[in-house]
Length: 349
Image (tube, rainbow, N blue to C red):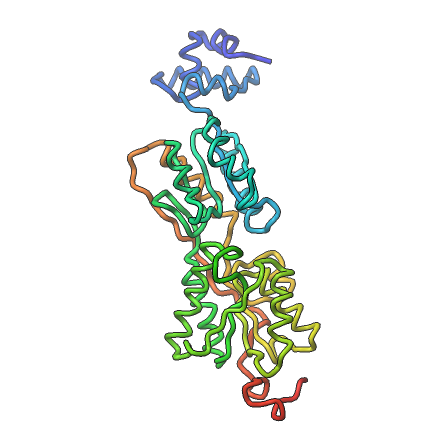
């Protein structure tokens, strides 16, 4: 395999000039740069990360920290980050550990401090343990993906607006008994962004004069969690709502499955809306607020590279759009379906 000395010899320049021409660190004339690059291409030379680091002072590595690797959102963000880093010839060092675990505490307190990377992208980090602040304290550029940013560069959707728009959609269809499904009050199963979605739901209900009827039914923020919580919610027809806002699509899909198994027709007897536009959303014809986590991952890389190029630049938050995608899980309210009218006045179809 050709080395930098071979490239320099073929281009008729010194090794240091060849290195500057290939890394962009330091001045060389355009003619010399082109000659060196042509020589490198002809010889099949590929600069190593260590070689680039010696010249630029950078490791060409970005650390990525996230709580889960098997959830749709996180895997899509990771794919976007990886694609963008490869385009810029950066390596990716991935660190994942379950929230609250001993391994996670060790990672934030000691492990990451020993690692060498040019910057960090933190995905879905919660404010409770002050973990994002610890990452910032390492003195490296940090970009956050998700609702919480601690003053760093960040990218996310407007979660509060998403919750409000999802609820407004149901209110516009005539629904008044609307439940917010998923997560819990103390935040153990609700992320910072999910809590903002609940705030948006409450704001929409309040603006419509429905604050007194607002309900939050707790449950794990997963498809099985949504199913389990919905079975309990929908099992009693005296308190059954006409519509559900799922904290995310996985919870909403769980609610649709629960309704079908209970013989409740969606959307004729129950409207369900989610947030995310998960890969399952189209399969279940779920009305949802769309987000594109792959694009958020790419945007996070762009923010980090900007910060690396200009460390003094002010922090920015990029809000990715989250348009309402209307499918067949929502419909105008059927007054006869409302359990509030009374058991004797309603008949299941």
